[in-house]
Image 1 (cartoon, one colour):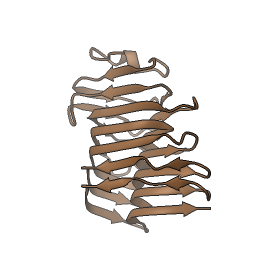
Image 2: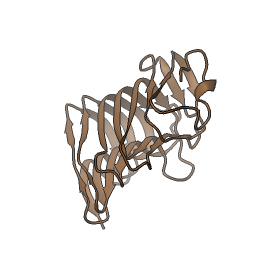
Image 3: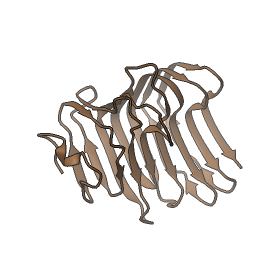
Length: 219
């Protein structure tokens, strides 16, 4: 799938196949579909600030939901995502489940301070213990009214430990509660872990409570 001339090829849910590359050129691409990707795919832009995926204040968020029982790969690189806004459900700019996820050179920001979101990036594994995440060189800035910036979690009976967050910048964000970077197990009996290094967090404001980093288990 190549959307270099227009976005009609990737506008609808299911308009892709296993191993596809969605190649977005420089420009702004409105995205309010909240489509769920279920197969291996790569989304490749022309660079931060060059290729912009605009959620437009909708309850949109790019999601990978793998229910196949075997790990699938997902890659996002070299683009910007802007203006997600929570309406209902579990909102995040990016939300991936049970995949081997890589994200590199990606920017997130909002142009409207009234927009809210639960998380910027959520990665979780609740069925496949070989899922993983490598997040590097992301730039999150000027987002208000959210709970978490980068959130990792798993559930009882599962292990999700191959996670890396590095060489990234988080700046000028306002969090109502929650944590800037979190690792969590929901329900006793799971294992969560990862490596976090060479990151910069600047001007993070917590209006209710929370912290910059948390590793937690909840029953």
